Length: 620
Image (cartoon, rainbow, N blue to C red):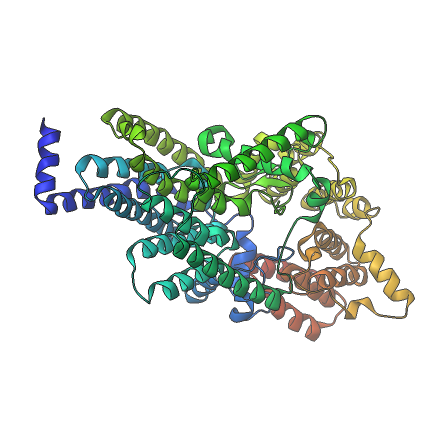
């Protein structure tokens, strides 16, 4: 009775309801900030180092060049708006992981409150007014989004700012589309979509999603027969989508000379009708992340190569084709518009064009935008479907709060796993330790942290060779060489890497035969090879040769590394050290200053100590 009385008073006195909404805003903020409070203690991991180094002005880049260039070497993603935030942050206050993570938490909090705001607008639009029960139900739903385990990666990993900011702008787009009227509406929506695209291209389906959402919102009853979407809304969405995407891809092709990126190896292996199987396997992976995240989340989700053969691809392909056909049929009958709308925002990440990174079929952070749109669509579905209104009960709210408690604990347990490369790859290795990419990062992190015995134990285990045999063999040799280097076994480093054949060295042989000097050449600094294992092999050889005093040979290996990526700071350091060893002090000093300009402070300290040790040894 007390709850009913409170609800009636809220209807009579709008300021009471406003206060209740404000209470929920505070509750959402407190819950999220407490859950993610440990994130600020995490350091930089994985791709963070490269992104931060570039944002600091490293590798001889200007801020504008960094903003308008690819995100990473060998990964031609064009996301200037987010890279611009990294550049502004690093140029303003230097590298500080706590500040970087605080920004991620702030964006996620903003996204959460935007979802709550959109839900309130939708509920008011559908019902004409709000009440305490509805606000409570919407608040509980927003809590589930805020703490969903699949979004931990997006918040706890600094490099996932792309997903957070793109989602933020996409939510502003939806809110603006719901509230704005008049001549300014279309230009504002267009600018917002363009900003979202320049944050992450995966938002390309946003205008179509909103057009379909708007149609579902304003349809009072399901029409029989062929459904006609409101022409104005559809045209608006298509125009914004085509113009925005056209500008984005033109800019991308202009600045980094590659408009579309696909994993060609995966595309070939899963070509033809098998592409439907890859899409289906990706959808199944994301479904497990959404509905069973506690055992599914992680930094790496390998492509199921074992499922590429046999009857499974046929079954999965058939299922995907039937599902797609059913959506078309139901769409023509005026049904499933919300499901089709959601598919518009998830389609860019389900490997229609293979986007796999290092053999990963999916990433947790890719769900940041789709989960937000699923939450928004769910409000429309429930409030517009009488049979589903029974979900808006105290029992359903109690179940939601129980799920929230479980999500909370999962966040508190998982966030520390993103603390360092060591903790991150130890976690990944628990699930996929035999896979080459995970094994490489796990062993490298163990060696970097001086855990030699553990690294040797991992290397003694079998590795899943998979399909790229040459690359795996190169990787294994590189890891063993890293281990020998850490133990000071210089000759074994050279011996281990001696039989390794690289594409770079083959190219050098061809150039030399034609009378050219490959040391005066270099690849584009953002070529796919620029971040490959080849450059690491040259650096390992160079460091070992420097340690035993073979400075001329060390210079040769450093030159190869510079050829692969002339902006790699460690390659320039190795070349500078080789010059020191040959007595070319002036050239060495100049090269060393260029090298450390592309380093983070922590890396510069290590380089300075190594330089001091080398100079002391040369004096002796």
